[in-house]
Length: 98
Image 1 (tube, rainbow, N blue to C red):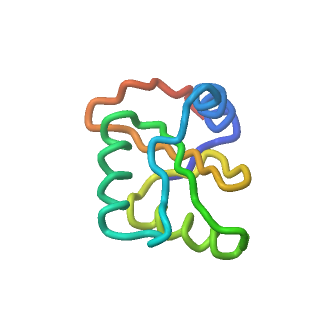
Image 2: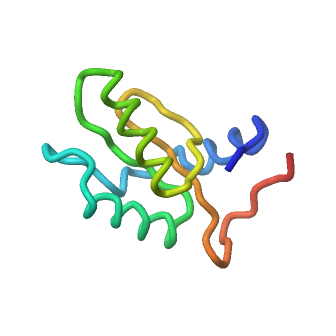
């Protein structure tokens, strides 16, 4: 899923007050964590995910894996926090057109 700059800015403003709903633990990205992310995306559409680790390359690899597995769009990545968006079956958030 590709988002335009205007759409990303809109979603960033919506995500600003949100707290992370999924926190990756010491075990990293597991099937259980992916299932939780899937559930959260289906329910909320726009979520924050907290990725542990001090190495940036590892966080980027985990981020890429999450995006690939969930088919979500990366809205923003700041430090250890990812903002992900995927429209639900019945979308709640109406994003502006390109």
